[in-house]
Length: 184
Image 1 (cartoon, helix red, strand yellow):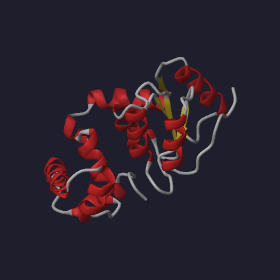
Image 2 (cartoon, rainbow, N blue to C red):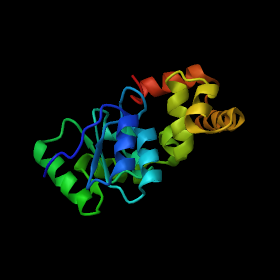
Image 3 (cartoon, rainbow, N blue to C red):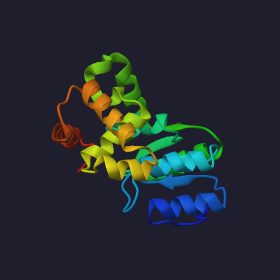
Image 4 (cartoon, helix red, strand yellow):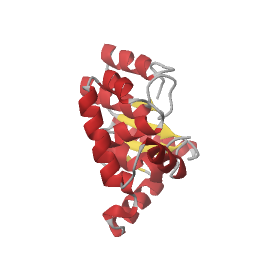
């Protein structure tokens, strides 16, 4: 096993993936320019077959399910053992998904919970993406430009997110995201 390339930002990662295929892309959620969710989506558009393993400091219960829905092949917390990282990389390189015990527990727990137990988990991939950007303080114009959508489309998604989550405004979104560990 060897490291073929390194990137410090989401845009650098995307550029590398555009240039060549890798056995596995190891991706963090928190990056300086573009978050891991957006980077993952672009990678999957550029190379749908590309194996992507998320290695993050965020707890599995916060992001794993939405990232797996967005196309990640696995999700590990940075607190895991080095042996588990190796097992996960090997599984993803073979074309499989890798679910840590914590992710498997999160998935199993969600089978027992009513859909409304964690409102953000009921959002679609795009709604969750917009939710995270709004909660982080971005305005619809910025989001529209970044995601190549119209401002009206972003506003429509915002309205859906607020309705589904039974929140009144962006301040409520930010409070919810902080309270649930979705942003810092």
